[in-house]
Structure formats: structure tokens, C-alpha cells
Amino acid sequence: MSILGEFVRLDPAVLDEFRADPNEAYDRLSNFEDVDRLDLGRAWERLAALMDAAHFHMNPITAGTLYPDEQTSWGARADSRSLTVQEVALAAGLLSRTPFDFLRPHLRQVLKEEEGILVDLDPASPRYLEPLSNEEAAQVSMSDERVRNIELVLTDRYQALVAFFDAAARDGQCTVFWAA
Image (tube, rainbow, N blue to C red; front, top):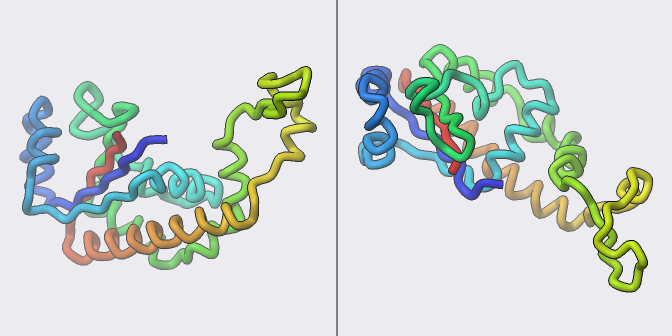
């Protein structure tokens, strides 16, 4: 997972100004001081996966258009994205109407899917470090305490995301998101 998932809120004119010079857009945006930012940290991928699992009409983390354009987008996967004022308003309404409790039932599945290939970690086993079968992997579970700790972090970051989008919608702003 990436360590940074950052949103910025911008007035549409500033977004267009930055987009007009795509080769400088990242530098201008990352050095722009008069902007509200939200760093989701590592929680961005899990929140995006939870929203997808819950079938959000619009996932504010993965929706929008490549920013500043397809050739010059940046980030961990070259998928920096921007949302228009209208998309921000739609996302803000959806987020405000959807408590984290709606996402919670999907958490264990999201965590299971991100674990990847599980291997035999018993050094005494003749299959040490070999991949587990699907049946064996199904028996491996994350502790309830660990899931609860992850849930607390995600709840906090989700609430911050809701507040961030509420403010952006109220102020008629666009957003840009990228992960690095």
C-alpha cells in the first residue's frame, strides 16, 4: 500500500490554471500553500475498496478524470484524479448520507482480499513458505482486535473525508486526489 493518499480542494479557476500547464501542474499543486488538504495516509486504499464493496454510486477516491490529463497524471499509479464542482457536490451528498456503519460489514472481506497469497509460516513444516491451498487460507483469520484497530482508523479517516467534501461542496470547489 502507498503511504500517502492526499486530497486538495481548489477553486475551479485555480484548477483550470494549473491544468493549463500540465508539465508544471504537480509542482504548482504540491507547493500551493493557499489550499485545504486532507491526507488519508494509508487508509485511502481501504476506504476506496470499502466504498467499491458497498457499491457507492460514486467513489470520491477513484472517480473523476485523470489530472491534469492522461499523459501527465502522476502518483503511485499515475492516476491522479480531479472532480468537478458538480461531482464534489454529488460525492459530498453521498458521503454525508452514508455513515461508516454502512461500510463496516465489508471490512473483513476487504482485508482478506488485500492479504494476497498466504504461505505456510511454520518452520517445522515440510511446506515452509509454500503457498497455502484455498482451504488452508480460509482457516487463517485476522484477530478481532486487529480488525477493530483498523476499523477505528478507517472510521476517523472516513469522517475526515465526509467533512472535507462537505466543505468543498459548500465552497463550490473541485478536488484533486493522488497517492504516492
